[in-house]
Image 1 (cartoon, helix red, strand yellow):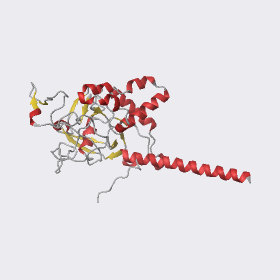
Image 2 (spheres, rainbow, N blue to C red):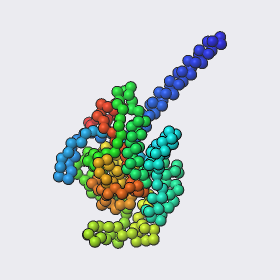
Image 3 (cartoon, rainbow, N blue to C red):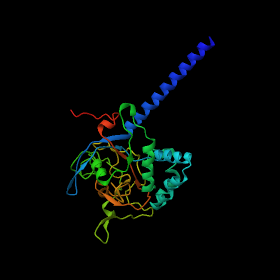
Image 4 (cartoon, rainbow, N blue to C red):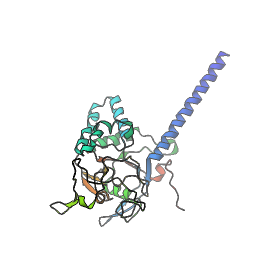
Length: 304
């Protein structure tokens, strides 16, 4: 009787563990579906040239503080002090943004309220190390025919192609020339200002005049990023391609798409600025080369 009970208990535990393992697997793929989107191959018509772009998957939003804490935690567990030193965020960079940002020095990278906000104040080298780490730790649905993915930063051309969301016209990822919809709601996270805040520098370039002690243009209520999946996604399901954080690219020392610190004109698909190291308005997202057949868990909606 005891033997029968032991065998029965053993069988129950095995089935429970198998069910638990399968649930973890399903949850991983569910999270993956929610976090990434498939960008099909096509032509990028830009800057007077036509370029072929291969298909890839791309993170729907920017890498978040939660993703980054998970990464740093693993480096600490492994005792990889060299990489950890490179990848620690520099919270003091918030002090350079404006006097209103001082609270973020203590809270932005650690408080649960900001877990879904883009990680900032990290270097391009740190972002590339994250891509390597993610490639090693990310397991696709191999049983479903998936292939192991190698994550990286997008090239400048790939990023613009993705930002356009399948549209050939339009300065912004939503296609139109306006920064608000017909209800007056903003379509991106950027600096808002009035005519009294616009001036020109010695070269004739338009600049925003910040005219109060806090360093923020009058009428502007943006002093921080928005959550990684904010506003409306573009045609490829990507969020915040315009504004929020300027994003790192693989092949050039620039950041693209503008940020919460830039006026609307400078958050266009083709907007870019020099990369000058870690900053409170610079972040990134990852991509991986993939054909549709490589990612069976990514079910594309068929056009009717």
